[in-house]
Length: 94
Image (cartoon, rainbow, N blue to C red):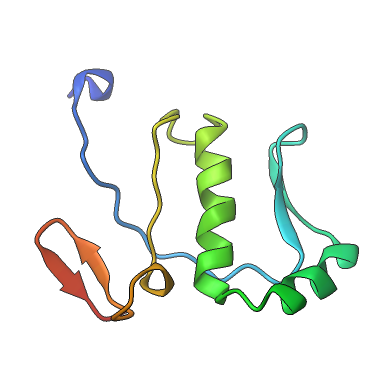
């Protein structure tokens, strides 16, 4: 069996559900929470759903809760002018 702590992993590729408006990572409770009072704020900001979602996923990952990778970075189609997701030397329509 491989020792995963010694592996240098450059990329994690995964699909995710779009989080409902007002959802945030709660650092103390170590879970996503839907907060009604933030729904209007999210709508007003007009941020793309995938961008808002990946920001919260990055917060979760940086808390060392799942992958224990504080250097975790996130990207999504909404962060890119062509709405494609670059993965290594490729770009995918998602």
